[in-house]
Image 1 (cartoon, rainbow, N blue to C red):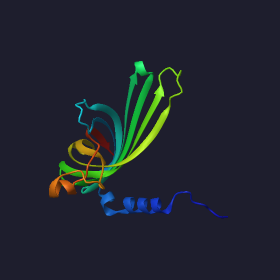
Image 2: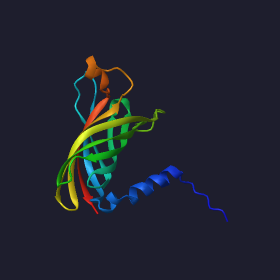
Image 3: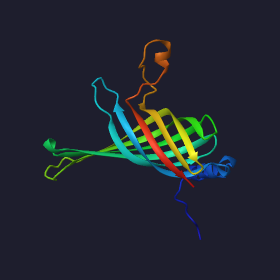
Image 4: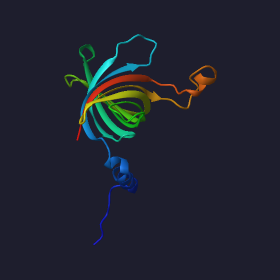
Amino acid sequence: MRIVCTVPMRYVILSAVLFGSPSIAAAQGFGVGARLAWVHADSTVDVDAVRFTGGQIRLISPRWGVEVSLDHHSESFELLNQKVIETPIQTSLLLRMGSGRTALFLLGGPGWYKRKVKPINGLEVLNVDNTEFGWHAGVGLEVLPVRHFGIHGDYRYTFLDFGKDKGQGLVGGLLPGHRGSMWTLGATFYF
């Protein structure tokens, strides 16, 4: 009898490394929580931030962590007979700058930003569904008032652009461009 594994070997190896490392055994833990995000588009027009609600799953050790987050926002435009639904999913590697109850952290990783436009009353045939990929990076702070509960916030740039000359001068030419930013505020229960 032959057993066929449908999971790519790289995922099996990555899981073994993550869950087999000594820092996971001594980790603060696995956490699940909720969050709010305020997203700003990088434009010359002065527009308000758009609020998203969502949640995250975190795996945190004293020095590093992994976060997977999903946010959601929907808005209806009656005059256009359109409903816009946005659902970004971000995976972030967290590098903690301290190991106490209050710690700064750096974060970064890939994101998939799904946008769906559909008719409100179903009369039109407009139905747009697309997903964009982009990198994000930022800085945050987590406070652990008790052992199994954390409050965290961060500021991150989204849709980082590493390949184009966006700035002027020596430093400006080295920094990546971006298409937006977001503030997040969340609470996580650790097990």
